[in-house]
Length: 247
Image 1 (cartoon, rainbow, N blue to C red):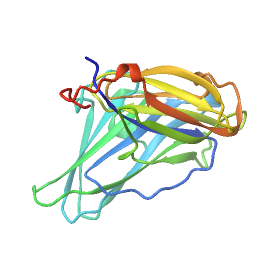
Image 2: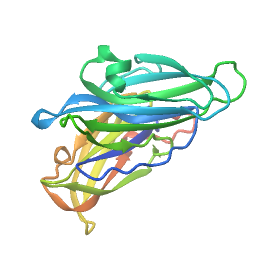
Image 3: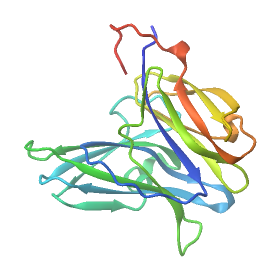
Image 4: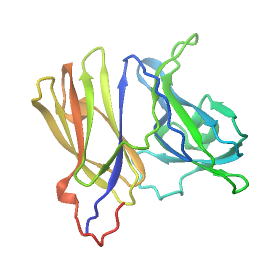
């Protein structure tokens, strides 16, 4: 029987002004997209991250990488471990290249889990990530990616991503992280600025993995005046059996 599932949604808008956001402190964070991939016109995209230990205990941190478009097993992806003193902040200029060099050129999502080194008190982290390209040796261009703790869809909930756009100057991409133990089936609908449906497509995201699509891949040829994208679980793939585990 198909189970009700949980997924996480993030949207990436390229060639738009990045916005820095404050982070909520927690022992657990998910960075919905980390990348080390070749882009168009000779560009190379990568991800940097800053992790702060805001607690008064030493934190043992495990970072686990889940590659895109892969059926991954919970807590069984390649991992990197490090410790942070109370109040310490560490910045990694190239997350995949530094922590997971064996993964090569790829993208996916990152899970961070902190525990107190002594078992006393809570280890709390604040995490900020940035996806950028380094085509210009004098500067980089990119945007902040917020860690996702609350952007969850349960059952028939809908994630709404306003401001989606696709033209020669701005290109929006929709990324979905599945943190359930099974593949999930999605319906992704794009609306124009007046609320009319532009395209609806069905997609699947493998277990504990990231999938990302451009608006063009979602059936949108042009959306110059920003509209919105709505992401929902396919209702045909959900059961409401109360004895069924919730993922």
